[in-house]
Length: 345
Image (tube, one colour):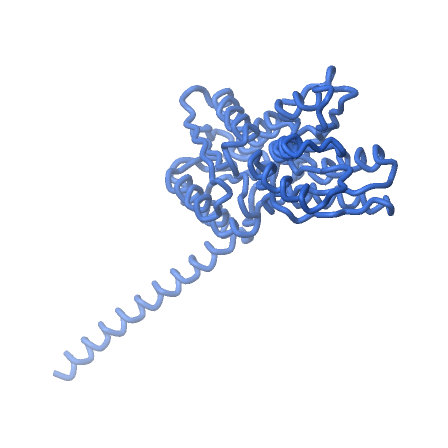
């Protein structure tokens, strides 16, 4: 009887020991997996990919997905088209592509990334609705072995690379034009937008330049035109009512700038000029109009950014990392003086 009890006790002890060992190992794996900065975390992420193994020379590009800020903006529509074209150019017609809009809704974009991750997407191209807020979704994608490329604006969470316009330069170039044209004196309004990294950088570049003109007064800089034509129209209508004397407007993108011009036309105001960012076709047309108040735009290259994002992602898939994790695309200024010879996108 005593021997039987000893045997039972030994058996229970072994079972408990086995359980404890299993819990300890599971805990270690869990800690490793939640830390993308450790080598072990990277290995875990790579091994959990059901479809691809990023970093191998024989990897084949099978799928690319793009979550954009707002597909009502033709800028992002063009990017989506170029992402699809470049992906198929690299991997052939069998490459699956998906282009969706977050409408600058963080929860929606997080869900989109989770869906891309679950469907074993090779490369996720992200135009972040919220640089910091999207971090958890990016981290989960990375831990699952996905390649994540931020495009047009930055994103936290350990993205593999960021391909973006030099947005600080865009703000600087645009607002230097304003300062010089006003000869260093006048009232300026900044038509702001969604507080994504690219917009923040453009406004920062603009403010840095305008600060060098002590006789230029910045009347407003915080009104959110939502980066859209309707938003620009709404905000500019209010600003025109609030400020009877405006000499220049810096719009963070061309859709909101075109909306601002529409507001000016409705109010029959011709006493100021507008400078935007993008190089959008509608802005180029507005700049070319002899009697229009749209004066200039700092052009971006949405096709170039989109193509570069796919190319960099594919290089990483094949084990080739970019020399720099941030790739900046320069801008150029299109004005009424050179609009006939320069092209936007």
